[in-house]
Length: 234
Image (tube, rainbow, N blue to C red; front, side):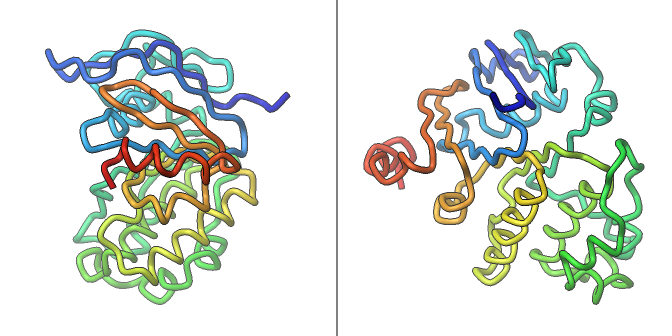
């Protein structure tokens, strides 16, 4: 039996009075890549934020490697080996690329060295001295992911990493996800770009109205495409 990295049961979440998650149930095994699909507003980003403790109130159960985290503070959740890459990237414009990279503390053992990161992202080595604002969208996205890898995180929560980027950069990000999976990282992706996500994930979870309504594997994908187009409106 595979080791379970993340298990969520009956998760409800709120932003203030707004009830956004309505009983999410899902699990992710160690070394697995799982993609959350759904229309905007389905609750995918809120699920990632809830895992990190970044929404107002959570009830239910979120277990990370067997430890219950639903009442835990965000900084303690991060120390369990989680890294979150939000859609807005959060690059500090006044700092150089390398200063941005060095900013987060080491949270767990086994983070990538700067040299390993530069091997994975040669563009960042070339742009090490450039200010955050001078990086292209693709370089900013690579930097946002690279920062997490330095912290020692083993479960990566990636929100729309391909959005708005040129196809050549999207291809590089796909290679990055494949490499990280080979290295044993566990990844949960929220993706609107189905063509990007389709070949990368082991399993796909479809969300609607703040809960998971469908689940299928990579092998089942061809037979589910028509149904998926209905759900996603693509």
